[in-house]
Length: 262
Image (cartoon, rainbow, N blue to C red; front, top):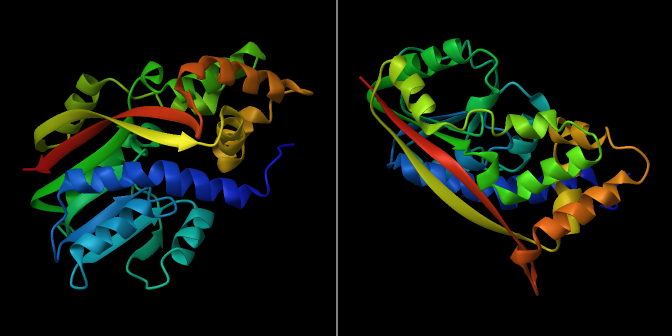
C-alpha cells in the first residue's frame, strides 16, 4: 500500500530518530546516576532503557518491561551487550520486590495504560523511599502540528484517527500532576518541553508513520482507494511553513512529569 522498503525500516526511523531523542530527554530529566537501579515501563524497543544503562554504568541495574513480545525482541537485538534485562509483563503486576528501584521511567505509556490505578500503585511499590518516577506524555494535539495535520488529513477522508488521537488523550498537566500525587508521590512537577525532528519531506513523514507501528497503521488502513495521496497533500499544505531545502521540521511538545516516592 505504501511506497517504503519495509515496515521494519519505518520502525527504525520512528523509534530511533523520533522517540529516541524524547527518551533521552526523559532520562536526563530523571538525573540517572552511576550504580542506580532503573525500571523502564512500557519500554517498547528500549531507547530509554539503553540510554539509562549508559548512565548507570556497569554496576547499575536496568530493566525494560513491556507487554508486547515483538517490541522486546527488537529491543534485545538493539542491545547486543545485554546492558538491559528485558521482561515481558503487564504493568499492573510487576515481578519485582518492594522498594527495588531508584527510578521508574516511562515514555509515552501513561495515556495507554489499561489499568492506570494498578500500574501507578505498582510503580510506587517498587520504588525505594525517595525514589523518582518520570513520565513523558505528549501535550495537546495542537502543540504537535505534524501529528495534528496527520489526524486532520485522515478526517478529511472520513477516517476517525482513533489510535493517533490516543497519544494526546492525557494532555492536561494539572490533571496528570493531581493523579500522580494521589498515588503517594511528593514533589510532583510537570514541565513542558518541545523537540524538533527533521524528515526528508512531508510525504516521507506521512508514509513513515503510516508504516511505523501496527497500532498507528490501523488508522491508515481505513483509507479507501487513493486517499493516502489526499492525506499527503493535506499534510504538505499544513506543514508548508516548516519546509526547508533539506526536508520538513516536525515539532512535538510533551509534558515531563516528575514525582518522588514519600
